[in-house]
Length: 365
Image (tube, rainbow, N blue to C red; front, side, top):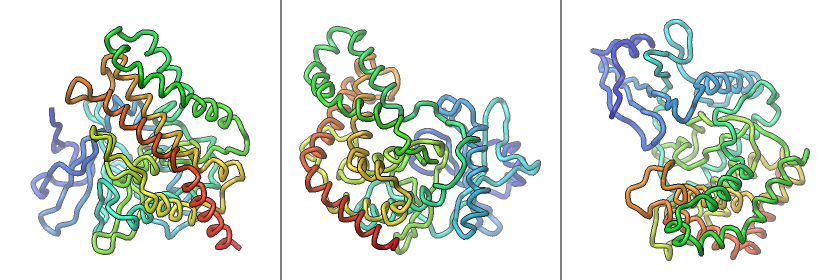
């Protein structure tokens, strides 16, 4: 059921309902999002209802964003960091009937794209995520909390995968037998993650955690990056989360929804573009261990998403919405093929990483 903002919500932010045009906005699936346009002067705002089934404590989102905004205002005052517009009572969230609403500035002249259509877009998006990570690299993480606990905890996801194998109904387990064996064959990815997460040189950072290209605002004319958006999952994490999600979603011409697996390829030009953009910004802050694990980032994220889809299939499709009976099975197979294609090109892609690291190091000198 579609939820529309009522007049009390609009008035809480100092907006008069009769002076607004309201319509659904964006391609996100988590929050209910609306574009508000004032009839008088055409000024625009984005209004969102936070999905409390996903974000159990919306106050954590607001607190994390506020602490990051305060830090950036002092240390990088020229940086555009989108923060919610307070209510007339000075609150960042308006709560009504156990619903949490927020108002966000609309950035004029901006556009989002749902997939990278050329390497320049991949470069620009990665550069924005890298800049955010670089600017926040000195922030004190102690006050920050996880808006989604264990979001990218591969150890937990792998354990859930093993439980699903044990408890799956026989027909689903039999259908997925070959794919289960394939994912288990790559279990060294989970082992490596478990080893890395306790290494002090593999540091915790304030990460975005959802670096799909549509979470960057681009200039609608030049397609140059403007800033990062959708900061709900801004929380402590590892560099492989953000970089890995970019590799997972930028380098392949088709999404995880594609069931013609012959279309799944790793585009080297896109891989180089995103590595170049990201490392130009964040490269100077990386530890040696982080630099050594840049290729692992893509394996980590693709593997984790693949076993999450397969876990849900084995559990009877209880988490991800599906449109047909084998939807999660196909999604898992999609990610498995992408993982295999990435690993096949590891020597080539590692050379690209080495080149981009060298360029970023020279620019720091």
